[in-house]
Structure formats: structure tokens, C-alpha cells
Image (cartoon, rainbow, N blue to C red; front, side, top):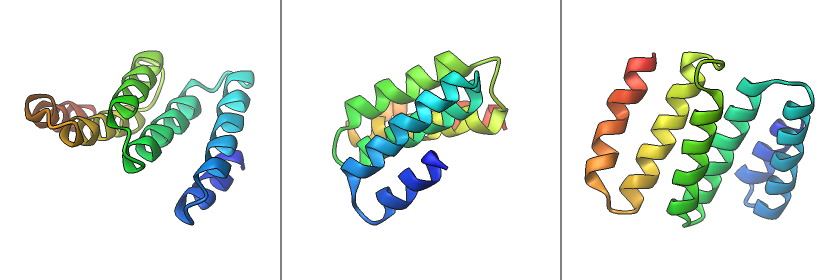
Length: 109
């Protein structure tokens, strides 16, 4: 529910509210031992950072989400981390990293 509320707030541009909900969702995922959900929420937070103009933060969050969840999360969740990371690298004007990551995402699917 916290993740869904965060997405709703994100969609209407209430980024501070969205961030609070996402942080709560991360806490709940951790408390429940749900690594996959935590990965998904952190990657969503990376997407929010990217769209707000903070691509380096987005790269860090997406990479962190992937590293924490690899071997535990579903391939589609891990693929999502690589797609967001690729978008963030593109926004940072790093074409080499941006062009190799979609293939990494596709491999996981």
C-alpha cells in the first residue's frame, strides 16, 4: 500500500510525499524480509530521481537495488533495475554505459 501511495503521489507531482511513502515501503519490505519488493521500490525511487534531474543518484540507487537483490529477485525485477540505470546513464551523457545495459536487461528476461 505504501508503494502504491508513493506511485500515486509521484504521478501527480507531489515528490516529497512520494518519497516518504517509498521510504516507508522500503522499511516494510525490509521488516518483512521481502528483498524483491525492496528492489522494486528502490528502483522506482531511482526513476523518480532521474525524472527530477538527479541522474547520478538514480544510477547509484539502481545499481544498489540490483546488487542487493541479484539471485533473490525475479528476472523481470532485475531487468527493471538495468533499464532505469540505462536511462540514468543516458541522461548523464554516458552512451557507452547506456547502450550496454538494455542488453543486460534483456538477458534477464
